[in-house]
Length: 340
Image (cartoon, rainbow, N blue to C red; front, side, top):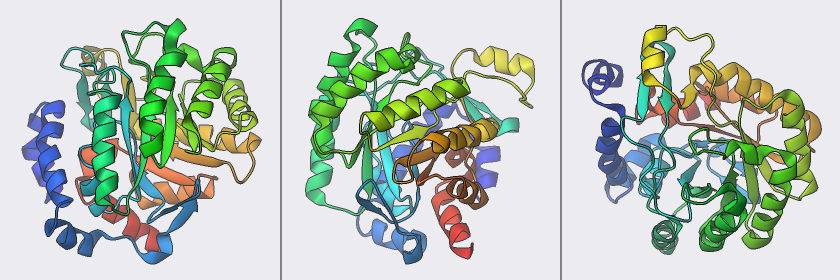
């Protein structure tokens, strides 16, 4: 039914508005007794349980950052069968993000362009929600993705990240430093090893015992992927996420005029698949086996997840295909993985 709903209804609605309409439905899935009914048909098989980052995951497949920016859908997404939910990106300062429209579907490519700009209610508000979530309990592993506040100069980025870390790390199962979104001016420049090292050191020290990862862009040259991966290992980080969205527009099926009209922003979805897999392999070339690598980008089917795991991914994340596959997407993935 979902493909019909998407084709005839959802595809005609502004994608950001469609996302906001889905939020209360997904939240309802996380509330008893609805969560019991949903979980009865979506719970991952026991053999899919995965140990990583010192944590137990019901499935190796989870939701990437960006879908639940403000910690509002964790319980519902967990009920739908996702093995973890990475919330955010959260910033120390609340911010509205970039002007709308800022989210665009490329249906022919099963892709999305976004320039959301880290719209979120801030780390302090998110910490309150995470605290309530922790007090209620639950099985879902929650990662927290943090970025630089737009109002903060790049020179002051480290203090800004540390402030978010101090608020959120005690409540996170793992913490992710996002220096790879293309939608915050100057952010990607922080991926350079000479600037990234002191930033990650400061966040690592502030995070205490919470596992820390760094998320990189697919647009980094291969040698820089190796350099950042080695840096993460040298600093004692728990892992790395490969990859964020891309600024490339190569090989798209969508007419060029439509792509140009969408404008700047990060491209996610199926066109990212090949490069995301290549970056995963590049990372694995230089990190030890026990170092966690979470693969994201262009993941849609159980075969895609299986390919990433075979290439060395510890865990796999998706986001964009949720728009095209619907709320039982994780169930499809988990059943496909179980069948092998």
